[in-house]
Image (cartoon, rainbow, N blue to C red; front, side, top):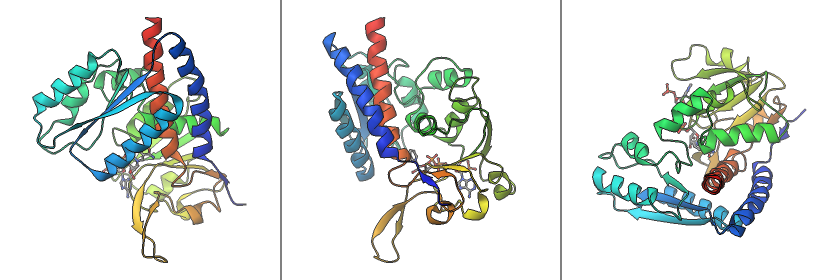
Length: 293
Ligand SMILES: NC(=O)c1ccc[n+]([C@@H]2O[C@H](COP(=O)([O-])OP(=O)(O)OC[C@H]3O[C@@H](n4cnc5c(N)ncnc54)[C@H](OP(=O)(O)O)[C@@H]3O)[C@@H](O)[C@H]2O)c1
């Protein structure tokens, strides 16, 4: 039987509706949550991603702004800009759009974001808290994966989750989130990468399979057991053979895998919209913390 298609846009709009109410409450107390993105250089893909975030923020009532910095900025100047935002009372969340130009040290820049405003959870302080199971900001993409699973009725609790990919922004934090002895987590987690021997042998053991590899259609039907829940984080641009035009596909061979999976996220319209929603949720949480402080 073909899989249930998990609709990320629908789940994201549910989250947005909830956020609108929280934002309205904050505004009654004179606080408008504010999210600022820092963009170094003029990468068109980053600009388009940030426009999507700005649209989402506008829809829920979050103030948003992109600080554009020149590609030749020095490390010290970048950190000075971050520090200015750290001290700006109208800014509750700061994100640093990656990748940075090669001459800049990403970890140092991420470490400069105040942990209280680090709404994409990239400051190592928050990474450590995540791993320890302490209250923190989860990075928005893995947070979105957890939210997609829970809200679509496929809680990871007690399940074997196999994650393909160990990046610092998706695979590793997702492992850290799902392994916690907490509601919506408490899973048995396996993380795969290019050093994994017999990848199909491991992925076939998954109750929930998460693909975050950045390789178009790398997860094929023979790598998935019947009845698996498949979450596709990948976003890859390929050329559509029929039209010759570029199109977006995930890391999963959607058409073939949906015949075996119990549920699957599409690309686009799966994890992407929920990522943006979780970034906004973290910004609202940061602003709420300020009112309760
Ligand atoms: N939906 C969203 O909101 C969202 C957000 C972020 C990223 N993404 C997308 O998610 C994908 C992954 O992003 P990322 O930043 O995590 O990528 P990344 O930093 O390139 O990491 C890819 C990971 O996949 C592993 N990998 C690659 N090919 C593999 C293979 N054939 N077998 C096993 N493991 C393999 C790599 O292993 P090694 O460590 O051994 O190299 C690495 O750990 C990309 O398509 C990206 O565009 C989507």
